Amino acid sequence: MVSGIAKLRFIRYASTYCGRKRISIVGSGPSGFYTAYRLLTKSEVPLHITMWEKLPVPFGLSRYGVAPDHPEVKNCEDTFTKCAKEFSRPGQKHLFEFIGGVTVGEEVKLTELLKKQDAVVLSYGCTGDKKLGIPGENSTKGVFSSREFVNWYNGHPDFATSPKFIDFDWSKVRNVGIIGNGNVALDLTRVLISNKISELWSGTDISPIAMKCLQRAPIQNVKLIARRDFSHSKFTNKELREMWELEKYGIRGRIDPTYFREDMFNLNTIKDRAFKRRVEMCSEYLKPYEQRTKRNYQKFLPPGANGQTWELDYLKTPIAINSDSSGNLSSLTVCKNEITADNRVVSLKDQELTYELDLLITSLGYAGQPLPEFASLHIQFDKSHLAATAGRVLTTQGSTYPGLYASGWIKTGSTGVIASTMMGAFEVADVLLQDLPKLPSRPTGPVDLTHIAHTNWHHWEILNKRELQKGEEQNKTRSKFLTYQELQCSN
Ligand SMILES: Cc1cc2nc3c(=O)[nH]c(=O)nc-3n(C[C@H](O)[C@H](O)[C@H](O)COP(=O)(O)OP(=O)(O)OC[C@H]3O[C@@H](n4cnc5c(N)ncnc54)[C@H](O)[C@@H]3O)c2cc1C
Ligand SMILES: NC(=O)c1ccc[n+]([C@@H]2O[C@H](COP(=O)([O-])OP(=O)(O)OC[C@H]3O[C@@H](n4cnc5c(N)ncnc54)[C@H](OP(=O)(O)O)[C@@H]3O)[C@@H](O)[C@H]2O)c1
Image (cartoon, rainbow, N blue to C red; front, side):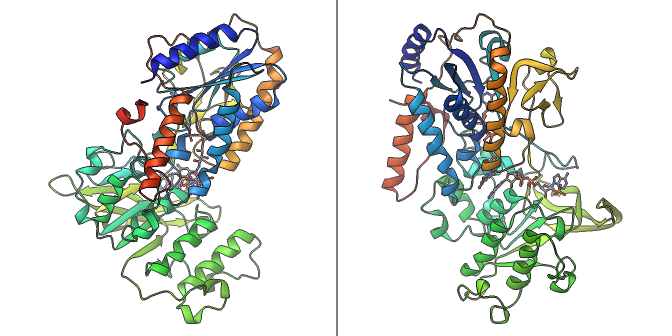
């Protein structure tokens, strides 16, 4: 830990910050950083922004969510870095400080922030899992949530070395089921089905521990199980195309003709252009190469099938996860569904099917979690996100909580890409700037961190340099440190 350096910086800041409005932002993912960026670049009133992050390092899901083979998505980190660097130099109008390794609600209380700051923005994302609520979901070995799995392969310190993954017998994994068909489910499918294509992964920052486990798995099929039909698929076209293009490695995609056939859709009458492209894409890729009619689908002659497949399955609701006598996953029981004219899912309880599976991932979305003090502060928390209007957090009585704001996934639930998260964060920052002169004035001050071990931006800069350097030595974009011990050490 760098508590010595941090202490010095704290004393310096404490003595020079008088007169600035104090704003705390909880969370250093895209929403926290875009909120900070907007505030710092738009505010005429001098600001002192403190960003609190529970991990020792910044960037949230940009670092621990976005797939390792999509490094261009992480370019947002350049803007965040520029923002942090530019505004953490002392002697300027605004000041920014990053405090890592501190969980708000635990080491530092929200109540304390609300007392000592002019405003607080909650941008702490969704840190839990949505659940199916069916038998076997929590107890079966070989069943993981998308959040656990993604965190594991991205080297998150809570998961990277977890025995739940490392002690799992990967050598037996042939058939994989994924519940849900959003873009996270596609990320998971790509990682799993291309586990033997080392050229896809060797230059990325995927956790080497995860890669080693995954490479041991003789994966044959990954089935994405959706409760609705093809027309309600949740993934987007760019990500789906990436799946089809795995044919260049001999990996093939499948959709049972019950759920998708070219003759089910008339391309001339489909109005939604994205959906029309999706229908065309699937129709073309499902044809043998030489029968494809559009050049876009004949970019390269695919090699013979290598036996590995991914498959879009539809109209199934999971009803039970079954295990063998040792508690290992054996199969998933589903029932068939129908979609009504008004788009409701009706489960046909008497039409059950069983899928033999060796690994099952529930990819239902992440769930936001309330901070422990919400109940006593009477802050309204709906099912898996905060209740807010125009970014102003609501109380259980429906009024706005003075000086408390929310941006990003904790406000919207786990939906939206980085670009939409940015737009949302900008709107919240603009509302906060409008409110700032009207907020009750109170004697604000720094939070005393003397006895709380934490990291700061300088610490991250050292660590970042080391990760990049280590990566360069191994011909990778980055080589992440995987444990708290390594992440906290900047000596
Ligand atoms: C697997 C996955 C892949 C994705 N891939 C893409 C992609 O390719 N392209 C794209 O545009 N979007 C992608 N997204 C969406 C994108 O990641 C989100 O839109 C964005 O990260 C949401 O930002 P956020 O700041 O609200 O939440 P987060 O990114 O989750 O950030 C929240 C931060 O708050 C911290 N925190 C939590 N609790 C506390 C606390 N109590 N105290 C202090 N800190 C706390 C967390 O550690 C985290 O750093 C992906 C999402 C997932 C899940
Ligand atoms: N490359 C990228 O741009 C990228 C990559 C990853 C993530 N993201 C974004 O991150 C956000 C989150 O993605 P996500 O995939 O986690 O969530 P998502 O898009 O909301 O998909 C969740 C999936 O889970 C299903 N589901 C939810 N509850 C269920 C239940 N009880 N039973 C059965 N199925 C259930 C949903 O089905 P229904 O549709 O029937 O509800 C849906 O198919 C999205 O906005 C996504 O676009 C983007």
